[in-house]
Length: 220
Image 1: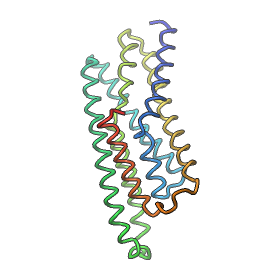
Image 2 (image 1 turned 180 degrees about the vertical axis):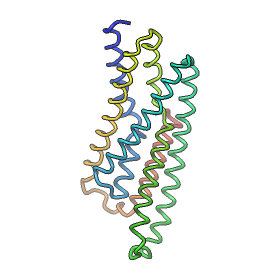
Image 3 (image 1 turned 135 degrees about the horizontal axis):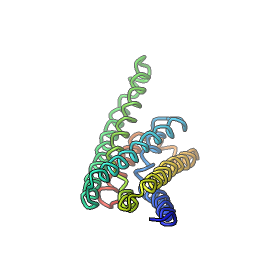
Image 4 (image 1 turned 45 degrees about the vertical axis):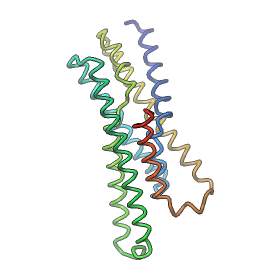
């Protein structure tokens, strides 16, 4: 495989990474919804997005490298990715529904706990739990287009080609996730639908569950 073919693969990996991320609303909508509902700063929202994105891409990279090392066939890796995608989708649905139910219960108790000295500690713990839950779900979430792109240079024994494709796909995915979250967060600063602000957590749960449904039922 010559350098021209590697360049084409790298460009293809970058293009697919950007389009795959933008079309898959699960790559950014959960962070936008939770960041808005929980009052996270832009820096915290982007930081959590970056960590989850690294776990998301890193798990698929690891799977692809292990598959290449062991000589696992493309069909087997594709099946594993499919199972991981289903797990991630159902995980987002469950997380969104549980979070939405929690939000409704929390809203009922809001006035009683607003003056409690333990309230801020509970909120801080909830933030950490939310971030770790998203991280675990995103680790299971596959980057389906990555495996076939990796196999092409691997079959020709072009390890630098594998590294170039990996780097291009990872960078494209992470940058697009961060950019999409940033654009959506900036857009949500416009004062609209103020009557719904008190239902921010419930709406966040609905948005996350919808993202999971898009994966499970529509393959996005």
